[in-house]
Amino acid sequence: MRDQGRAPLLELKDVKTYFKVQGGLLKAVNGVSLTVHEGETIGLVGESGCGKSTLGKTVLRLLRPVGGQVLYEGKDIWAFDRKERKAYTRQVQMIFQDPYACLDPLSVIGDTVAEGMDVHRMHRDKQARGQEILRLLTDVGLNEGHAARFPHEFSGGQRQRVGIARALSLKPKLIVCDEPISALDVSIQAQVVNLLKKLQREMGMAYIFITHDLSMVRQISDRIAVMYLGNIVEIADSEDIYLSNRHPYTKALLSAIPIADPTVERTRERIVLTGDVPSPVNLPAGCAFAGRCPRACERCRQETPALREIEKGHQVACHLVE
Ligand code: SF4
Image (cartoon, rainbow, N blue to C red; front, side, top):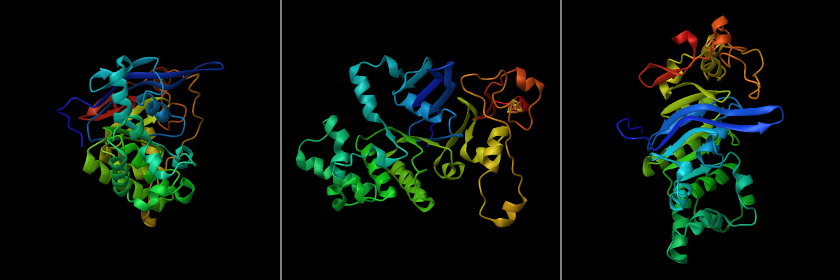
C-alpha cells in the first residue's frame, strides 16, 4: 500500500514521449506527472491509443521521453551509470498482454522462467537454479511437472502465470502489467488478478496495471489514473474514482461497465460519447476532450484545463470542477 510519508519509488515529472510520423509529431504521452510508492498498485486506464502503453514503455526505459523526467528511487533513469542501469532492468519488470507471443515456443517453461536469472547470474549452481524454478512455478500456482513442458501445452491462463513467474524471478520492486488479463476469459481474469494481489501481499512489489477494462482494475488498484489523449485527466484513490468521480470522461467510461443487477442496469444513466477522438498529431486547442464532451462550453475550446487537486489525493483536469 501507498506510504505517503516516504519518497516515491517511481516519479514521473511532466513526461512527454513523442514519435515522428508522416505529417508531424505524434504526442503519445504529453506531460504526465505521476508517483508510484513501494507496494502500491496504480491502475492506468483509458481507451486504446490514449498513451498508456507508451507510458509503460517509457517507465521501462524502452522509450526515451523527449521532455520531463522519470525518477527511480530519486534518480533520473536516463542518468544511470552501467551498474544502476543493470539494477533497474532487474528491479523493474513487465508482464505482457499476450503471454504466448513472448514465450519461446522451442524452450521448455523452466528455461523460460530462468532466462532473466541466467542473464543476471542470480543462482549459485544448477541445483539452486532448479529449486528456484520450482519455487517460482509453485508461487504462481503451477508445479514441478510444468517445468519440462513447452508453451503450446499450456492454456492462456497458465501462460500468463508463466509470464508472472518470469517477471518475479528477478525479485522486482515494480512490475508494469500491460493489459495482462485482456486476452483471457473472464473467469481466468479474476484468477490472475487474485494471484497478482496475493503475490504483492507476500513480496511487496508495486504494480502499474495498464488496462482499458474499468471493471477489473478496481479489484487490484489502490489509485487509478484515467488517461485521455496522452494526459491524465483524473487520478484518485480507487474507490473515489468509482464513487465520486468528477471528470466527464471518467463518468462516460464508468457508465459503459455492465452491472450484474438487471434492475440497476435498466435504470442507470448511460453516457454515450459522440464525436471522434482527435488525432494526437494535430491536437485541438483547449481541452482535448471538448469535441466529445457532453458538457463542453466555449472556454473548453480555448483554454486547456490543468490537472488540479480538488480534494486530498484527487486531481481532475476539467474547467467544470474548478
Ligand atoms: Fe468537458 Fe470542458 Fe471539462 Fe473538457 S474542460 S472535460 S470539455 S467540461
